[in-house]
Length: 154
Image (cartoon, rainbow, N blue to C red; front, side):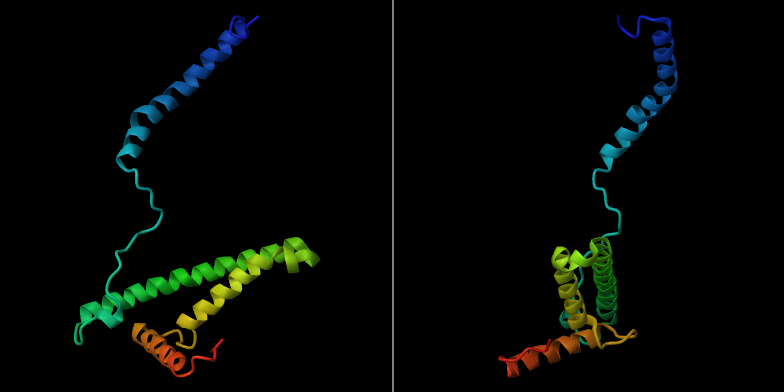
């Protein structure tokens, strides 16, 4: 015996169609066609890459401003990545307890590497550091490595 043949089954199916009909109609006729037009789903704004500070002409304030804004955005993104990795490491260590030393080793290594890379790029510049300061830091680091190939800074 099928559930739809009983009076209760017919009532339940009719009630379902009454409640579900408008929702299904709106979804199929309005929402899905609009989503097909906008297939690219980005949850953040995507900025086109601009020239870096070393590619800007001397006396071109617009290029310097664009490079500064890109540097600021890159620093924010890199800082958030380090923050997320730190949070994952702390959560893993809290969850695993005494076994965290070997169970969270990969997370700890990823976080340590990201923190070192962040410090190499942005460390010791200060809160008011700009793209020129970061470029000079990079230049000085490359010169130091060229003069001292057998040593490491960190």
